[in-house]
Structure formats: structure tokens, C-alpha cells
Length: 156
Ligand SMILES: CC(C)(COP(=O)(O)OP(=O)(O)OC[C@H]1O[C@@H](n2cnc3c(N)ncnc32)[C@H](O)[C@@H]1OP(=O)(O)O)[C@@H](O)C(=O)NCCC(=O)NCCS
Image (cartoon, rainbow, N blue to C red):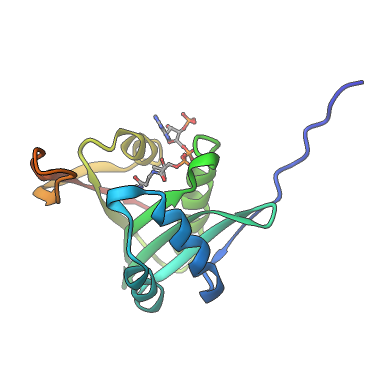
């Protein structure tokens, strides 16, 4: 008998306050770069959050700030067991199409110069490098030097 793959039950929607515990749990697993609970709370209050829910489980989220027609992607994380399955790409593609209909024209972000997985994702979505911020990210250990951030931009 042929197996029929079940379609993914994936929902992308604005973040709700009840999502914060799941987000904090995923952030904890990010180690040194994890956002603290107060930072997540503050971002929920001050910015625009989106989540991707698969089969009822929060698997990824993103925070944006928006000023007029300009967006900044502040953070995007896919929970580790769900990575490299297209979750972040679908999340960003959907969010950009929603913001585009609301008049957003471009999106900026900063990414660590060694964060190649994120850079590959952004390049696939059309982002280009428009700048560099020297020593933007604090070092992971005393022996490391701070990491530069690349500034990326895409026209929506
Ligand atoms: C970056 C991140 C959000 C990507 O999430 P994801 O759901 O695994 O990404 P997707 O599966 O949607 O990947 C889409 C594309 O991104 C690229 N990509 C994603 N992960 C990659 C990896 N580990 N290596 C190389 N390319 C990768 C690929 O081009 C991929 O397309 P393909 O599968 O057709 O090759 C995830 O790795 C993550 O949460 N990282 C930790 C947090 C982080 O660094 N966030 C970015 C802050 S700037």
C-alpha cells in the first residue's frame, strides 16, 4: 500500500501573550544568545510578534519593529527539532506578504557574520548586504573577540 504523507497543519498568526512561555522555553535552548524573559515581554509589548504553529505546537517565532514603510526583523528562531524543514522561510514569506499589502516597502536586519545558516536563509529570500557593524555582538567566552554584524536589506 502506498503511504500518503499527511499535509502539515501549519498556522502562521500574530503572537499572543499566551505564546510567551513557549517562546521563553525555545529561547532558553539557544544558550548564550538567548533572549531573557523580560526582553521577550518587552518585545511583545513594544513590537510586532508572529508565530508559526505546527500541529498545535509553537515551532518558530519572529519579532519585527515597524516605522512607516520600513520593517526591522529583530529576531527569528525555529525550535531546534523543526529546523531545516522550511519553517522559517514560510514564516518570513507569509509575514512579508502581509506587510506588503499594508504598504511596507523594505526590511532590514542584523546577523552575526558567522551565522551562516541565517545568512543563507536571508539570501534565499533576496536580502543583500548593505553594511557592517563592528564588534556588535558580545563574545561567547573570554577568549573570543566580539563578532561583527552584517546589515542586510530586502525590498518587499
Ligand atoms: C536561522 C533559522 C531561523 C533558520 O530556520 P529554519 O526553519 O531551519 O530555516 P528553513 O528550514 O526555513 O530554511 C530555509 C533556507 O535557509 C537556509 N538554511 C537554513 N538552515 C540552514 C543551515 N543550517 N545550513 C545552510 N542553510 C540553511 C537554506 O537555504 C534553506 O533552504 P533549503 O532548505 O531549500 O536549502 C534557524 O537556524 C534558527 O533558529 N537559528 C538560531 C537563531 C538565529 O540564528 N536566528 C537568526 C538571527 S539573525
